[in-house]
Image 1 (cartoon, rainbow, N blue to C red):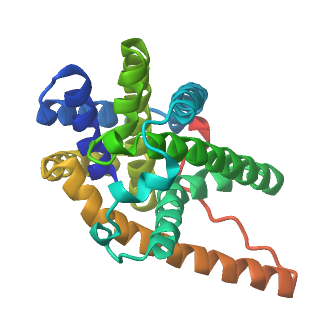
Image 2: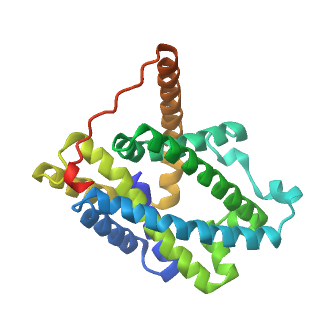
Length: 270
């Protein structure tokens, strides 16, 4: 996932500032490398501070475009081609996308949840899911209302923002870069902390190797990486959902709650 985020960062830099994609990805890789040598609490603060700005901007973009659509809802189908998707079945693609969201969130939520009480983790999952659902509905509504433009864009949300006002596009670019950065950090840290003690010598060596390898792989291109990896992540997410459902049913039937896994994150960093 980090590889896709680095490629996405390169695309965002290119679309917004004309910076070569390879340089944009390099800047993003350096930012990830520097951040992951710091405490994990700083990562969580960064994640929380960006989200409100994203919500506000998404609401503005969605509201403006949904109230001024360039394509009637009845004609949206003429601009889409379901055969370009991996399965060609719309409802299966919807389930797969849900799997992608779960697969992306699972690694970092497993760490955050392990450090929270059951009550806090439960509320966080509920409220976070509701917020994500509302944002997805708003954003997809905005994309569909201008699908004659967004269907061919690499970063369609940015295109919509630019058509409203350049300042809004700049604000969205900054937020997008921060979100991409946070996602890359949030995906790589759990992986590294599973195998090495955070901030140890071996951890830092693995971090450097992972970021360097991820950067060179990101040069393949954002769209190509998304088309290849997203279906795989979707199926992985579906498998995780099935497993979590089985565990939840088992805990209800037996009356036993699954114990929290021990995390490698040092307490001094939380």
